[in-house]
Image (cartoon, rainbow, N blue to C red):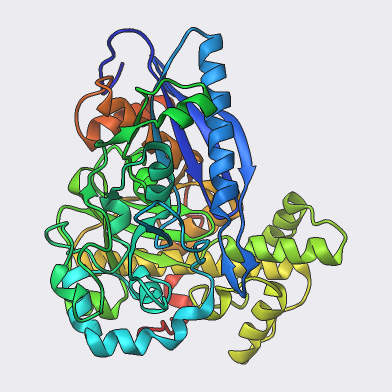
Length: 496
């Protein structure tokens, strides 16, 4: 097998992959043709207004995980296989507060809840924003974990477990904090990869607030007896830390054949950047609002968290309520037929973070620029995709300038890689080749880290990516005209 080795027959691994709108449990196998993924269970997710705030129903999510693991075990048994391990990835920054008895204090808040607005200035008075960035290298976003913790009424007698760590704790009884997700908290030292403990005191936080750190590939624990009974899996089944921030797993599975690439993990959010060996913690980097998040094998995901397909998802949801049910394929075709050069918005504007009334908000945002946008659905879709593509191109250009690197090709992975119009507009805006796929990059990265832990693979990220290259054929998009970036007005970024 290209890029790795196998021993002892085919290995089977279970990936728990949960996004903002749904969760899945996926079986992963290694074959001579590359990794093979089979989705055995899907379950819904979504932010809910509960107890006066936007929250995640982690009890329902955990029930979905258990059901999926049970089905995964049954599917493996039918082919004479045994699940070797389980890996969990989700979105970042959100957490649950757990007391000594393991009781969840309340359902976790969603990053889309506006509770942090009142405390951001308090955090920056305690630790000036320049110092915070120089230590943690984290892009300012109003929902970063550090601001969410400041908004809590009390943190006495609890530990904070990031969402994938909370689910792993429920499976194993072991509390750990996976490093790639820890790097999104605003409390991890970007240079050392350890907690920035000198920041905890000024922020009124206990150094023991988070469990100990583990890197991708470490064993978190084995299944509790009750979990083993509920799922039908062996108690010896390991829960292995992967890139538990879903973007970390996705970037690990980018099918890059050289180091000169940029990536866009395109989904609800868009994570746009390059891969580095060390963080960039300059004031210029902070002013550009770039983040230094940890990746697999100690790499740095130097990126900007930008607006994503949330804008389109929310428009589709609103139009479904209003009726008739939108036909996405028809909408995309109609949007593609519209002329280039239409109005755009700043997809990173915080006003787009909350749900509801997205089409009207987009039309209003264009109006504030002195232009007009038709309320026709195709026009709004085209505005969204043009805005995302130009935002991607600007971000990649900024990343090249700040890092001194050159991206010869742009890899788009995740759900957005299926949107042909978005991929073509990105190639046009950036003036370079785009390679789209795999759609399942997050699950692939999750499975490959588990397989390496299990001794089924060897080597580093280069070898893991060779496996992805062997099993995936990305769709190429060539720029149909020179870069249009210079013709698009720069949008004002909100830096706190």
